[in-house]
Image (cartoon, rainbow, N blue to C red; front, side, top):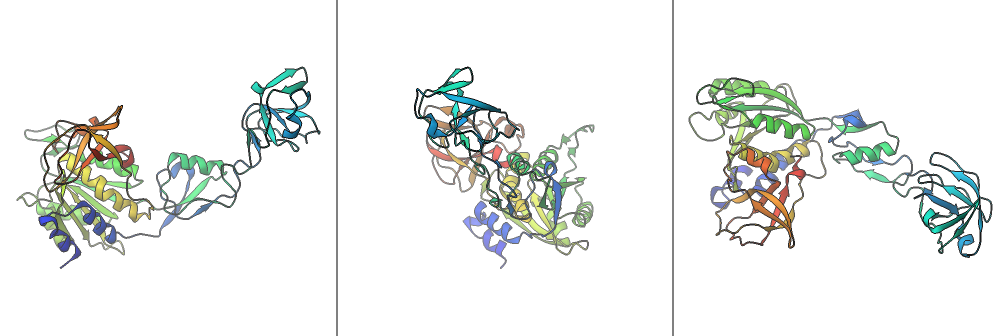
Length: 419
């Protein structure tokens, strides 16, 4: 019995999402190929090594605001006048501070030698070239010490971190121009079904436009993947097998939508079985019950090509991708954080106990006096693609539970999924 067969026997023939993900992650290859990219090209990519700071940020103690730099000890007497002996703007280096004097200083300017505090200009009375301090001053007041942001030699980011825009800024503050990252996954993306047409093509009777390809391509791009457009595959076994075989020679993984059920026109499973091996699961999730995972033999690579077969309904394809395929693609790149963060919200609806599948309801968030409340959209059909645009994320409802208005449930925001 394979691991997948053991999974299929749990939960009355339905595979829990947690078990499915654990199994998939155990099967994912992790490659060692890296590349060096400019900072601006490294967004959303995975760090290939620990990154230690080559210098401190800021590299010198500086003023946190506009005011007067001085030694705090000389500012304890409110009747004492203190001469202003110099002016220091950001980007300038002042002279050592004469004992008992102050320097006019501006935000970000280096603190002169001999000063250990900055008095806000609002707390000073100015009389020509002298000031009086209106309140007591303590050492290090309004001073940003050297290394207050980043200390030289400190571990800034660990290997496997997925770089965000703010991370790129932190690297730039260290003067870095490039960074070593894991290579991009190459993903072959295809849709199946004679009823599908690409936007811009003329619809014939009985046809619809394909939204899955565009949605998945956008999600993959956000994950830093290189996407190979394999187009639409017709509903024949020969055409499906050839398309999958060709894609496996060019990609790390192949993703299809549709064709993974057991209907007469669903040929993906049979084609994969001829090219490698495939497991067809019935997931204990709603939407998204049919899901296929397998491997396709590849003569072009030293490892098998991973295969993910998603349902054809657009919401089901989206949900199974973000819950299962997304963490797998991150794992291939050595990501240290695979699981999107969710948080508790109050339920904006009530209903009787649900079935045996965990539900992911498209819902809208609203701030209420009792806290955040998530209200599901009325139409939860897996074919209503626009409902994903109308919602803020997925409200997670465990199986078998009854929901009362105001109950605490978990909410998975689309912002965590790059969607």
